[in-house]
Image 1 (cartoon, rainbow, N blue to C red):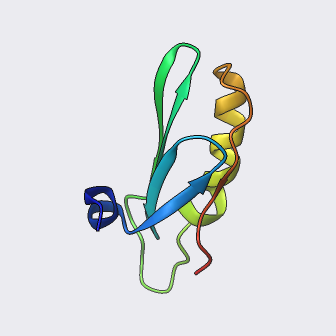
Image 2: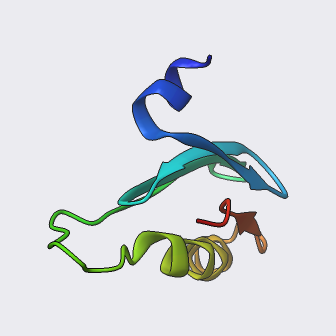
Length: 81
């Protein structure tokens, strides 16, 4: 098991780079023209019965921010569930 997986849960599949996620946290590391970049999302509170937002929002966040930063579009995929 990779240390990143132990800290964050399961691996994140991406077009470039690598990452890991759990229901309330996701991170994806990539290399851009300006150097290494880390995309991170963390939901600080999850109340009983509430659905985690990170799995739904993180792929769109990475795609938008990677373009904004000049990295080109980076697509990530979080595991279902």
